[in-house]
Length: 164
Image (cartoon, rainbow, N blue to C red; front, side):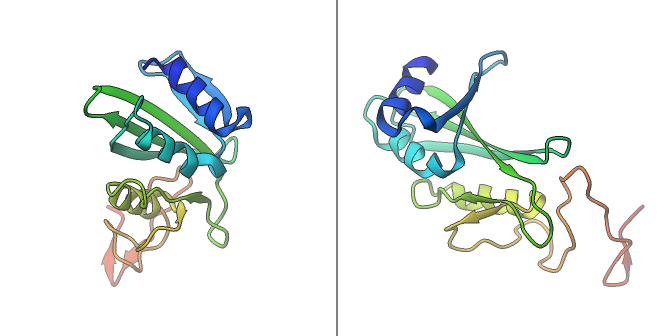
């Protein structure tokens, strides 16, 4: 299926309000959807026999401090059809007391477990419904989220100088 066919399928099955934007200018087109619709759309992409995106290859995030948003980018792959598809959702950046929230895809894709923990660890994005959301790369008591553009590393961690 083409990008446009997949987009039309998503609109047909989940409503026109699901699609927020599309970007066709890059190497791979990206469809931005409403974050509340993410589990519905992911389940559709996984279960529909026309798409069958059976593999969630990657989840990454992009920090946009100027707009006060974080983007979460999902790369899907269909092994039987050899198709790639990229989805994106936006959420507010929040702060240390109110971290941004995005629905988890762990119930649909097992690989989401690892990827969502990485995004939580490095960007502070809370994936609602994740079965074990905790840091995966940094110690549990690490301060802050290092891939945020306004991150300020702590000077010392347990008496060890962090900055070098």
